[in-house]
Image 1 (cartoon, rainbow, N blue to C red):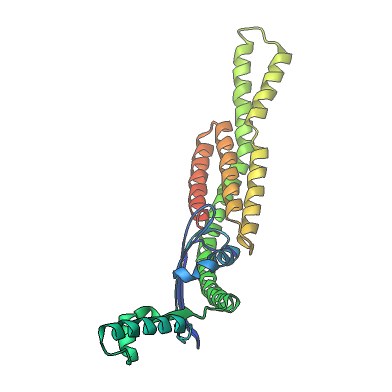
Image 2 (cartoon, rainbow, N blue to C red):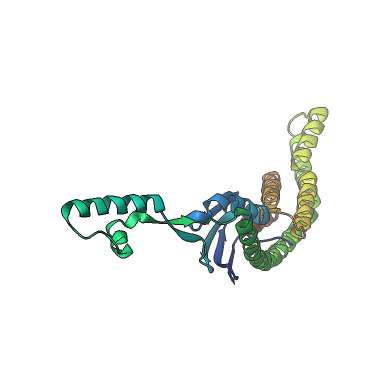
Length: 293
């Protein structure tokens, strides 16, 4: 079943280590464009996340917004700089001794005077462990997006199936009308020939050639056969589980070309009306095809 490029999904997960929130929005475009917005510390994983989304979604402009926070805040620890502390203490006491002041005996005073004595060191996060969590969470988000995409794809398929049915009916009317139109044209030509035969001499061989050429130019059997073939391929694509949006768009172009040729070959009021209606239906189908992955 076909899938729609327009989709939306939201996913939240609160694990023992991480809390995760994400949203995915997708709109139509010819290619697959993935925009990832998230914390800066997730930048090393951005390419992996983008490839994961592209693999699952195939086409569309996809905006993925990630919010992650660590539940267990044990990623950093405080480290005293003992060498620097000893140096500061000795220097402070020498100054105090020289000026007749009391030596520094309180640690809080030392830390107040020299706040750089204690530094924060990040333990860091294991990249493989982080990717295992993020990839699973994003996959769960994509599962929701795909389900919505399939639901909308079913609606698109129903609409296009109905319009393809109307197009087939009109094309069959054109197929039924074509030989009648040829016979009418042949009879009209014969009438004109009979009229001319009584007034001017005619070259029978040349006349036969011209008649054959005109009948060939008016023959639309090939165009109708190809149009039915395109419709059959189109219907097969609607039941495909692959990304068929571009193929459907190409088939719409080919259908429009065949109907356009049909219109140019048949200078007939009824056929003209049919071809105009067929063009309208093809355009409506093509508008829906723009939404298909």
